[in-house]
Image (tube, rainbow, N blue to C red; front, side):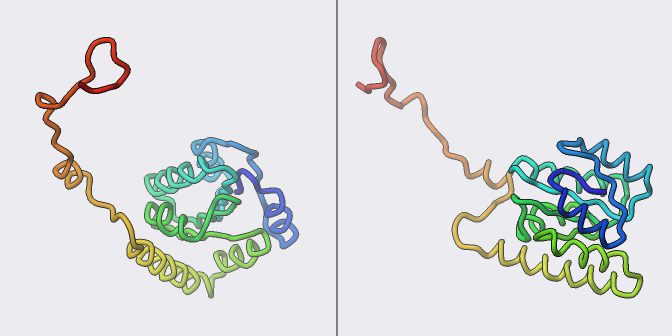
Length: 175
């Protein structure tokens, strides 16, 4: 299966004896998942051309997990990256999730994922790589994420009773 932004990848895979089911552009997750079940697909490919696609990919991974799927999920497209795949998509799906940087790599990735001999080692290698990427991402300098409850407990406490407010007829000036 292959979703949006996929023409070159589809041609390259088909030229290497993979059957590609092209569902078109901007296809809802439910329709893709229905086609996966109907066609008994061996893997799913999603491609992101615009930034909103990135969040939809994470949603799609969560849906695959919710449905108990374990087939490989391939991620590619102009707005995707290895870091985004490792941090925002792969943690939501326990099946193999692999970022494919460009069409020329699609055949190698797909072949590794359908190989009886090499699949487990390939998937383990990718998971190990993504774990390192997530660790590096978490160690970046700057603002650290905190749990929502901790952020709420640390919120600014404003005393509006003793705060100067603009008077009537003013445009934001304070007295």
